[in-house]
Image (cartoon, rainbow, N blue to C red; front, top):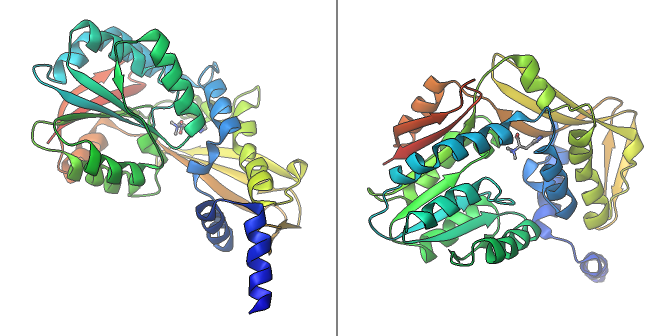
Length: 328
Ligand code: AVJ
């Protein structure tokens, strides 16, 4: 009908990402409302996450950095260096931690290609250009997209032996059971001589964990609320950022940090790109992120259920974090 044509023209004029639009519309229709944490990482969000990694309260990055730095030679040897492999990294980000391993592998004369994957094209561009100057001898081939698109692409384009890196406790971001499903997906991509190194944030004093997601400087709050800025810009929404706030809490029973954006009053938000309004009750929350913390026993069981054998735990002296090497 001509009405529908007019609508689609209006929508085309906005030139929005249809996947983002559909996911957000679906997620905000649900009770409770939710938006996937994968949408945090636009240009500004990736920069804010880089700031988070520097915060005194945010221990995971610093701890994993130290594990990789102190055990780089041993970890690299476990990869098996006698023949060629693709070093695939899911969620590579700025690659700050991975560069420790890349340098070590080049030093050990390993024959490999680095394949960084990330949802943020902006951060991959930064990574690519920094690698060209810092490690000019490195062979690289990057892919922009979410994990599932990446695995699909990898299956077709990167056969042969591979070592998959999934660092930074990104595995903790899934909904209940999503961590297992994702490891099973990775497992389907692996052959008997392949390996996967996964970074897990471990259970610790609940206060330490809670503070890591609610820093005093408010950077994590800005990171969470940046999601609304993105929806304003990309979907023509009219979220008033003063009328929403960041809230996060850690539950030591489930081991999950949950983050929310809470509406401070009853209000309606309109998405002009979608021709669509959403109402919020006073103090209604949008669930935006899970960050799962694991016990060593859970990690081993998770691996087992996914068809992966735990080969080696690499951890720090406080047992805050573990990089766990699995084989098929
Ligand atoms: C990038 C998923 C590892 O869950 O710790 C940091 C993201 N969110 N502060 C995490 C995050 C709030 C981070 N990961």
